[in-house]
Image (cartoon, rainbow, N blue to C red; front, side, top):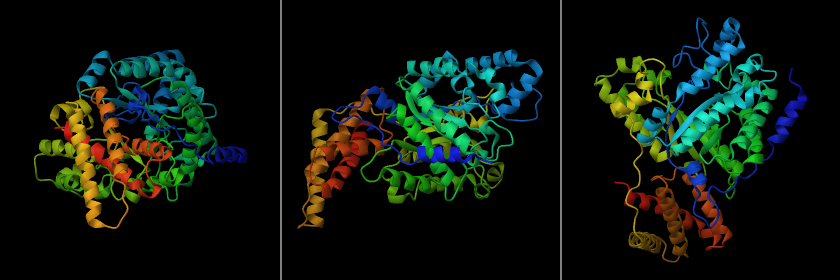
Length: 503
């Protein structure tokens, strides 16, 4: 039975989600760190680096029949002892990504990686107490320092950001072995002690990494089980966010959408209200190879449906809420191919490109699953293979920075169009086109600042817009009732900047 005390503590930590610092500092252009936190990311997962998956990297599994990290570490320790096992694991971590890999990633315009880690990897295994990995803590003594030295620091040298994804939780956040423990059945959600400990772990991670410029976010769970109502998830998210904000008020905090994006759009909207900002990004995974309904469709049908079913039908058009697509692939089920008439290679390319088009419109980044396989290539799961095939192409970047004259022409045209439209629609209405103009100019300047850093684009549009809107309100620009004109101006400014610079 759960001790009631831990429940009490978890609830008290989750009672009020604190506001985050604005995504950009009032009155200033975005800093490099803020650009890393908010740019449009074209990324990839380092699957099976710190959370082993047998089908990706099998050599640490030996003869064990199990396929989770716990199976691998326990069978190796039983057979070879702790020191030898630690050496084997460290060799895997140290050799997973090479200098050539970093160079290849940068050359292919990858600007972010998602790094799945387990709770056992953090702080020398100091968060394993009372959980299944406690017994193997010594194997992970150096994992955290290797994460920093061999992953976060080399990424920074190549101007690549890292999304730290706390992927493996005690008891598992879902029913799959990729939570790190075998026989997981989403037990994490039934264990208040584990949730409290992982909220603290999230805070520890934020504090330890806050001086790195290139942390794109901290993800506090991967693929949470679907729940309605999601009481356990909301309590844990709130507690973890609160712990993170004690140390770092600006880092984006990523939560899982539990396969129901709209549920979490509503939650974030409710928690931050009309004029708050809590710095949350919602993670949606786009796979079309698992559900029975997808298996019944042909590849052509799945491709045709993407535009209508990736991050659509969101409350108030998802206002105030940014998404990432933390995992996706070019894989379709064999049953789908059995219903498909066209050429498989051509359709795989078309599928990958259509997924990226939907993601570019609706999310602040994408992370393909996965980067590399131990032997050969992983086909439609394999980032390099799909890149070579042409299924994966980086998001287009702004080039040729616009001149002051181009800006002046763009802002005047857009403001006049706005003013004339409302004059026609509602001749007696009182409108404030200057608000629209201010929003437009602010967006253009923000987009230009991002473009000057490695031709970056704004990804977390809602976060930037919310931060600049609060700044405009604080500076008493125009009347509150017409502030929607400022917001429309901001949207239009971004659109026009990218129309002028992306060809």
